[in-house]
Amino acid sequence: MGKRILTVDDSKTMRDMVRFTLSGAGFEVVEAEDGVKALSLLDGTRVDLIITDINMPNMDGVTLVKKVRAGTSHRSIPILILTTEGGDQKKAEGRAAGATGWIIKPFAPEKLLQVVNKVCPSS
Image 1 (cartoon, one colour):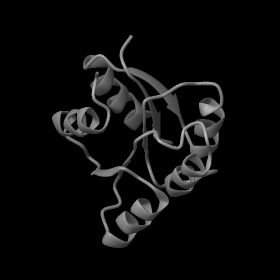
Image 2 (cartoon, helix red, strand yellow):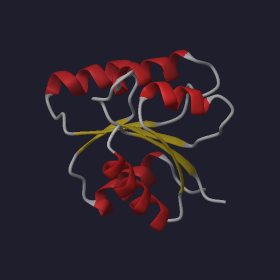
Image 3 (tube, one colour):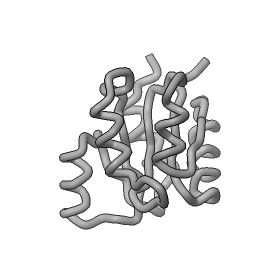
């Protein structure tokens, strides 16, 4: 079984595009529509990488990153932020929370896979 990636985005269309890209490259993908659902899913589920949006209802991506980093079982998992937000202040906020990397939407599938393979090597 390949690496398992959790994608977190309130847009089903975006989750579908990310899943299509990652599944086609041999990754297993699990999905959540916000940070609350993501944390619930992480309780008892092993993942190798988290890819999250910033702007979501219930719990935004930066808060999700902070909560994952504050926990014990998933603290070291790489977390990529995939968002339309490209400002330096937001990026600094993401880095301070513990994000591993930042990708701007719309994304090129090959760029997403390049970054995913860098932070989550297959072996």
